Image (cartoon, rainbow over all chains, first blue to last red; front, top):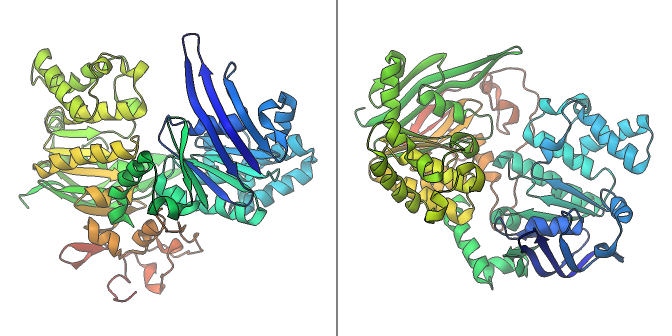
Length: 260
Length: 312
């Protein structure tokens, strides 16, 4: 679905240039879960915002990102607006805090359907209830306000917004970092089920190596803007080829030894 | 009981709002001995932070008692309370809110020493410098930077830990002390705290990270909805959890070659009794009555009617 070749992203300020992503090539197939793992500052989020072209003005983007024949690096703003939500939707770490506090959750999901797909009000409201139900939020939730939901419930409401336009790709950038393990398990199970049921691709960006290992079909490790390792979770655990991967594994191994 | 630094018995705390009372702690029992590290584990809202705050007398209990460093908190006057707290360290959950933003890192780390009058500025800074270095903030340029302007969340948290350790506490209460650290730093920070505990400091830490608790605490107390539902040596509790909620917590942990299993969603349970019953796959009619935390072996206690039956 996505074929990325030699993507580089460099942020520019008046004083200097900061390369965030350096010549990354990565394929993200439909119907599979691809994880991008690395430490803070490793370029993971920049990669996501590069795909969605949500980078600050003046940022230099080079290389190519092909999405089913559409070259994203050269698309104009109008094409990108059509691309976001309908083709690729984003769930971020703070997504649950991006809900508007003064509108009900059902209204906010319906709004995406009305604005993006032109679905009329009544039908959009019904569809919103169905979408919320898909993430295990029963009918009563559509009429609730964000403050009446727990963190995990809000995150699931945001997932139902993200899948509302049936995108081909769902991008989840640290979707559970703010949540406890039980709530994380519920949110991850929801994401995995959406991907399997709808045949979407999922790009899961996380610093949590165990989470990536137990969730994804294929993973990529980023370090200092470069992609240093790719493979299936079992390949990477069995024979990590890059020092940074080995360091990450041992840092977590210390804790996983008694934990699993 | 002379070896206990901290002992909460039957501790209940309720918060009042216009919508009614919220019971943040329900008859919780937790002990910490000299040189022992105890982790309180549970999901968000289970009462971990309230337990730590009540432990320092920052929240008044509605029932039960707290013994801190030999003193019964309910009998302490405010001056005594202040002196008791100075013998303790506290790492609050939010490193953005708890480190003075206008100070530089060095002054923030040395401030407690000066407030408690345990040394002049020079001595305080010397101590703070060695703590910051120990915690991996070894760049002198960083010490002079204002906390607000230049420190990341993880760095602020380490300054907050340095503040808590600056008075060489006899007892440290740590609320998610490594939550903002990446994997490598998390192990380093926790190793430092555990080392202090091995040297005789008591450590009571709240975390939702059970693997972290298992790796760095001697004992784990699992909390659910304000009650301690299981306690035991960390390794054995993780290998062989006895309470169904502990089992659910462990099933939810990601790991290599391990599928993350979400807990069963709540089902109807109009009977009160055990607070975990709505989500419990093993519930029976007996659970209509709330089970108390009771010993099942010399080192382990569980609040579950079914926990004593073998082979479940």
